[in-house]
Image 1 (cartoon, rainbow, N blue to C red):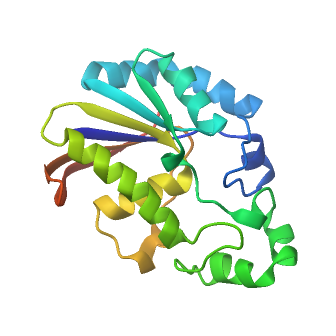
Image 2: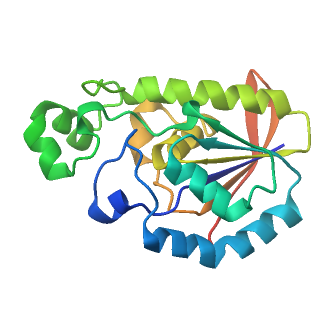
Length: 208
């Protein structure tokens, strides 16, 4: 089977360098324009080369609107909270300067020390977030692993990094070294094995 990961288009918060978390920011005008400019090439590439079973998208509008703009509801699509970005709690909607003033300790633990295990006040630790994302992802892969079908996940920066971490068996301590995906680029995995031992046969990155 194949798993294709797509990050949502640029948002107004991305433009302002604001941490979004579970806040439901919309796509920016520029983000929508970029999707509209590239969607025909993306759609043609995917529909020509892959047999799509289903699209799963985060239930936040920046993700599901990206999916709708690219795929125009041509494939079965399911929104899920499981693919939401990490819950940044009290820091959602702040920039780094504001975050540091509001809660210097959590800023230090997350932004400076890159602490995978630190629980953000009123939010998640990266460990909790990673468990949430991988539990959902592993289940969906296991359901389709013996087929030749393709699943598409349209989600967020850290959701994609979490899935890459688990598929490539990267240690928790090295999570923050995983390169963040660009808006609307594709991470394509060809997978095999079984539910207890999911293996990557091929990994490809594609930009349009």
